[in-house]
View 1 (tube, one colour):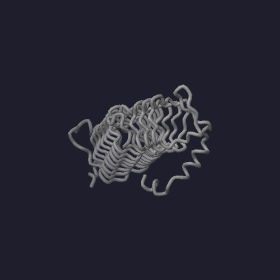
View 2 (cartoon, rainbow, N blue to C red):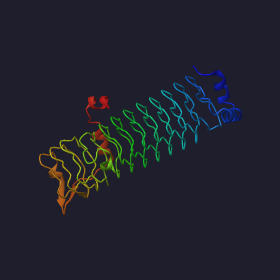
View 3 (cartoon, rainbow, N blue to C red):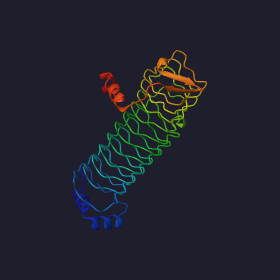
View 4 (cartoon, one colour):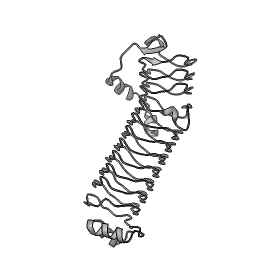
Length: 297
């Protein structure tokens, strides 16, 4: 249980800051405490132990939680823009619907974290451990995931436009119906082998997939607008209803692949669908998903 004196000081901003400065060796014990809706102007929470605590709806903008222990804590709907969690232990943390733009979670442990609908645009997640985290419908546009561990991550229906995946481990990542436009996905630790990913319905427009190994993958309804597929191995892949627009396919291997060839044109090494893509088409196609597939996600 939490230390009652530490909890009292938490909301006494001036006293808290003075106490932390006078006793930097003490680790504040805030475990299993409900702070929901409370107000505090202090931003100094380094190394606190808030495991199992609840911070719903709190404004913690610019807060410093570096090296804090927040295992199983709930920060759903909290305001955490530009806050810092460098090296923090966030295993199983609940950040549902959190506002975390520009957050710094470099080297943080987010294994099994619940990040559904979390806004993490422009976030720093370098070397973060996100194994088996759930990010469905989250937004991480322009975020830095260099060297992060995303093995087994559930990131369907996310916005990951222009994310930096250099050196990241994407083994078994679920990116179905996720926007991966302009990402450097082939620079991840797994290299050109994308066969371990789930990419059905993903948006891969303007993405460099040159030389990628995508044999026998489920690539139905993937958006390949202006993507670079030159030299990619798509043999045996299912590309039913995939969308192409000025997609570079010179030397691409399509042997045995399921492609709607009657719906595309090939000219000067560029593949373009005859029909245009409209948002209502994707909604309709989305509704065609197998129920079991989404229960799994």
